[in-house]
Length: 284
Ligand code: SAM
Image 1 (cartoon, rainbow, N blue to C red):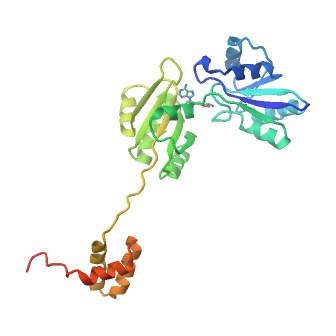
Image 2 (spheres, rainbow, N blue to C red):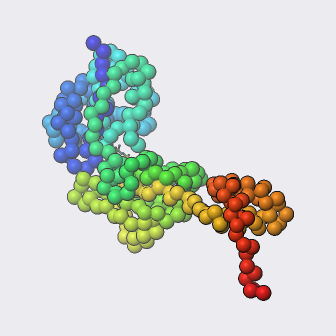
Image 3 (cartoon, helix red, strand yellow):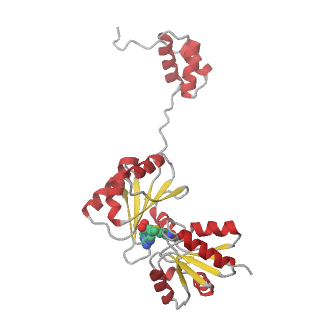
């Protein structure tokens, strides 16, 4: 019998959100790979689960990944958890899943809450299309390059941020994306859960006055579609006539304006011939 990896979601604040299936999976696993064993131990104690823990975090991913894989290949079952929410989402897990996939070890998910999707659901902003942008880089250049890349994205954007970086992040977001609607979801599922729905400049002003506390998810509306200018046939004819007055053949002028405006060349041409020449504005 081969082993199996379970990717198990854990609460993002409220322990009541640990699902019965997650409890069962943690109970049945041979061992648990945890981001911070002390954090996970608290959760396990609360549910009276006693299991060997293996630490698996950002800085030992490579070596621990190989070790966990070798145990899975030997037939053991492992549940991977992180400090909060879904593993693999701005958290360790992705590499382990990839290793298992490469080696033919089956992987199953036991879904739990994720701050990103929970905040999106509460935001009141469009949920039909969205992108998770994770944490912005602390390196100013990378951060601005990231924002530049997504500036004209039309879908809703989701960011994670730590409280002590919130004000500078809001300021960069405002500068790079312009003023847009934002929902800031704070301390989700905890006693001080709060959603502030405002715009980027309002959020910046608020948090310059009030020190941000707790964990935040930022949900920002996507870029507005560029304004498409529409022309009537008679406006298009006026432009064509101006071009013709400048020396272009009327037929060529109509063709050019048709391309610009999306109107039919023949309609513009007809209108040019029907409409009287523009009146002299001075009336002389
Ligand atoms: N894997 C987690 C998930 O699925 O949501 C995310 C882990 S990431 C290291 C931690 C970030 O998630 C925090 O800095 C914050 O932006 C967000 N976060 C986690 N718990 C939260 C909560 N209860 N309320 C608001 N944001 C939270």
